[in-house]
Image: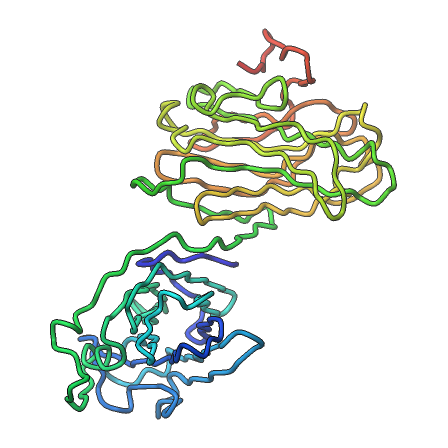
Length: 417
């Protein structure tokens, strides 16, 4: 599964062996090189053989090796690692970059790093750098028998010499070597990483995101449904409606759909539908979006759950919603999560009017997403319904029907508030 690791974060990887690719655009104004340091518990090398770089592309124990190659306009610094080959006294690999023309990294374009280990694909996006000409990109290590990766992205103002001295490598002193004060680690400002897509395709897939609570917190959670024209040459049956059912802490349910039940971002229900879309094509998918207030759990007094579904009214013409390939996407800051469960195309699919494309649970600390795969029954206008059950929530497909321009039914055993 693809994952994004924020600077300072660490995660267990499911293999002791893998690769690290650090890439950037090729620019003759810059001379960028990768160096890997094999470190002991004191974060120092045990000798010159603990340095892997362009003139020594492999260590004698086979812990890691370096290959640098140009792929079109991109330079790829690739480290192959085997943490299970750590010799006695070595516990970590620190992977670094240096810019040896003293131009710094501020104008290096498309700088990024990706770790591949087993079925883990972990992307690490850097922050904004200024005059730093040395960067500790990431660390690979073993703790409690588990291999892990840590995203670092911290800068040094003293290039390779400063990095070497920091890791205990003796360098020849001359006028170009910085003073000890100059080689102290410089904490650089971290900007928001570039978005990386997390795709959830199976019913059992789950992804959790921590809500950001500082001044840089995103001001909204974007949730959208997308679908395409199925190529049946009928322009009148591509109109799906994004509906969002909201389970409140007290067990009541609300429903959002455009245009008549659009909701509100700044007051109850703290979810707002931005508008009704009626057309889709292969090249321009249909897309409806809702804005969710990230503080919805706090404002509502507890945990809430959103059930996102797409609906095709009978009046739109017969169509199998599965053939329109509906997906749910959530965007929150640098986090992009897509629920892309592939619904089965089956006989009678034109008479199944509602497909649940994703579930979003929000508390005061986290957003948890997962696909669903559930649909309404054959020729049923029932809506998805949520209830609290044994500390979690339960989804059934027996909520009251909802139609545009018609007030939601009230007074029944299940009704929207």
